[in-house]
Length: 576
Image: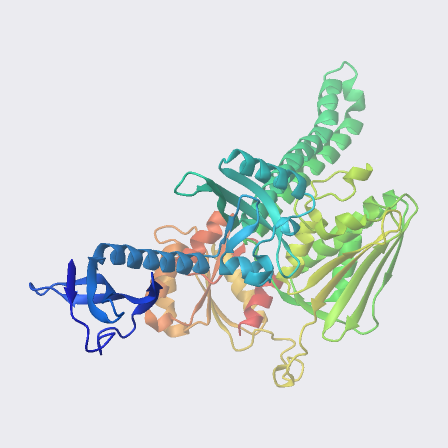
């Protein structure tokens, strides 16, 4: 819109040009440009650019003005949208945990987001106009930089993996993506990229590959270990079929028994480690003297130690040390360590087992002067299917799960185990630390109360078994230990006996006719009156599936026949 009007009274008009942009034109006439928002006759508003140019007479005075008003509503809307888009981009770029960057045609930074600055520990000024090559791991840099610069030259998309240096000095794996950026005129303006930290995924993949490698190695070892006893067994079968086979039978049967026992041990070890890894092992804890556990382990390992002509020295503290532990499992731990020492020490070597009190713990060390453990193998020596000595040609048989069982069983007892070695040829040492049992409370000390002869005094126990002889004799044994015990021989009789006896514990057979032990347990658990009663399964069924069934029916404990009275006493005693 073009218009002219008189401005003789004042230039510029009072109150009309506040905030206007003035510039000289031609002979220095003031020219005013101003962006305004005006209301149209229909009530709508538009953005305009007002341009005012003065008109002068011959004397140089202002005779009027030329006013140009340009509708810039569309342009303003585009500018506002561009500003909003820019703000959204910067907010997004500075929020996501990804390195976002833009390089120019010479691979220099022209933009990085906040995460980039936080990761590198640098300021915006530090990284602008410079290259990023020093961030790349030296092993990755040559190929990485060459590939990126080729993408710059050929204006192509780019992707690569590399390690970048974080501000704390740690190298992190990144998956990098970049696209070429072109200006409106089609000229190349650099690359825009994003780099995603994938360190956790890379480490997980490496761990899976290592697990897969060790699994393949384990299967190979398992096949080897099973073939070892199968070879002499197969030979023995052929010899027994020989005409003079009977003459050699005694010797062959002895050899067959030895090889079968080896196979049984391999299978038992596999089942044992499977139960441990699935948390299916239950410890039967009871107060035990350390000396008894050590002597049991030595007795178990003595044949192998003697076979290798080793000298074994055992040193125990003079004071009796008591542990609250599972006798079988703890004996298994120490026997495994002694067997390892015997296997990986040359004939005629020395093995020491020494125990000492260390505050509230006992420290048990098994040392040998054998072939030792390379420093690089120490961290993994307790891992599943690991045999630290196989690379040295000293595999000595086994599946590489003995030390894994040792660690798991020690941890289940609340202890720790550590391997030490000065290296190849320098021997090994395994140190087990276990908590000692707390000293007994004098107020409940059986000796002081005269309970030494009646460890179950005060307990009421109901024995339920359709085998009357078994039920009666067990009740008699419990009576002899101070309990008030009663025997019944079927499920209905057990339920009927509850109100009169009000037992603390029910020892319940499972395989009874009409109403089995599982149903009896369910009915007891369904009655709130017997919520405090403890139920112990007493059965010939001892598989893990049987234990799961009894747990599901509400049993507190599972014992197999014939009952181990020591275990039963320990369980009853700790829950009195």
